Image 1: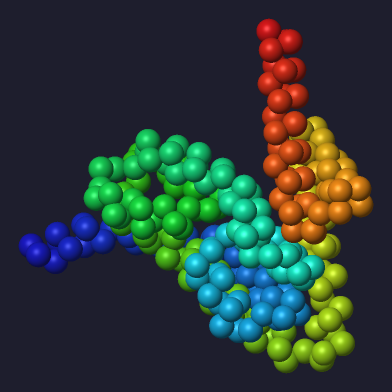
Image 2: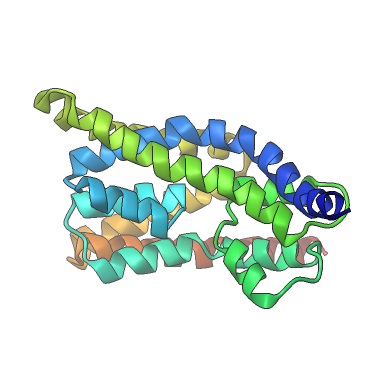
Length: 238
């Protein structure tokens, strides 16, 4: 009887683990590349793994590497990644409507593991999601990201120094690779990228801001302007 009860309690966790396998596999090449680029940026193995453990946000970690490579201050990096991850508030609020009643500390704990991918899988699941399901799902994604970040760093450390230095170019290539598909799908993204580039250029060349602050302000200003234009267009259509 006790075994049946335990199995019933573990079932949502196992379902989460099974659903998280695909995410774990998908995270492998991205995390390996992050670890490799972190080595070329000058981070230690401990710093690389710690960033993945504490942050667990691919785009933010890549941007942090880019900012670190140009000598940006810690505050600017934190502010930039905060702005970038504001969408997580919306994802958490949306998922909370689908979540079963659980202890607040459990929800707060698995909220840390909500990424674009874990949110998508949980949101598409039929019925409600429990804390056990979310823990299983996030364990697979989180474990893959952290472990493969360390493996990527170790692989990068074994490469010749000249190749390690040239790999820093891959960081910018990856940003372009992430941006281009979005540019094809949405006009708003084109305006966002264009305005951010203009504001960043003005910040560094005209107002002589530091690279870090220029990026932060360009991100904020472009987001505000694009959203204002989008709202204005919707009101005119009405």
